[in-house]
Image 1 (tube, rainbow, N blue to C red):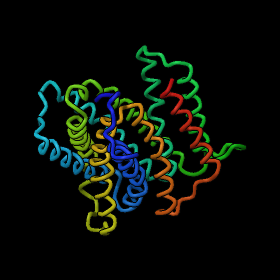
Image 2: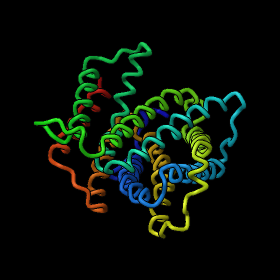
Image 3: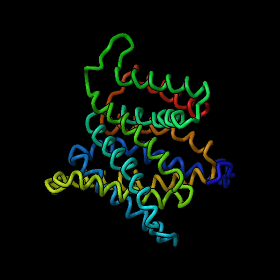
Image 4: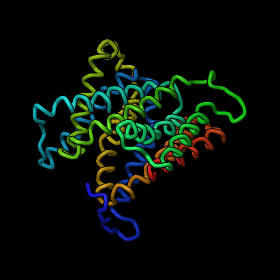
Length: 300
């Protein structure tokens, strides 16, 4: 992927812009859609079926592109590890956390992944600059505001803090996934790695939650629930990733990553409209602090 790639112009807006706008909308709307689906499905059943379906779609895309479908045996352990971090632990924490907290808060808290990425880089000897450290502290301060939902008193014992912490933990797992997958993504490409990570991660999660899958009342899920599930699998997982990669390839990493700041905005607006969720002025302020911290960390 060329970070300095030039966009293909389609008038005032490039093809890369369109791809990234599509990815942002799909990922943002994915939060309330998934939240609604989780009212009918167990988080494990939701995650396993969603990612198996998304993996099948990505394998189909690889086949259409005439790309290689199978890894070398020596690559399998790395792909299993990426699936463990990127799907089993990330998606498991995200789904359980989303089931316990609001879609609006989850969309803000999940943006802390670059902060954990900077901390992991520091542990590995790649020390962030002062701007990054300021951004890290600023972002975590914003996270505390969003969870606490107050500037004048401590309210951590109220509401759904367990769900909030699971989302933050999932964000950490995604940062680990990014570092583990980086070498093989550079070698094999993001679609190939993501397809196998989704498949292996879903298998691991399914084996751990076999009893849940066996006892899930699939027949009780209404058609609307299945439609929402289908959106999260097709658009929220498979297509959004393809669109994101296509946009980054055209605009470059620096310009393309800016779009990720709009994901919580789309998620919050769609959650307010679709789920009648309420986000307080304090949480909006906290969300702005988080996004400012993330921006500083990425630029530092």
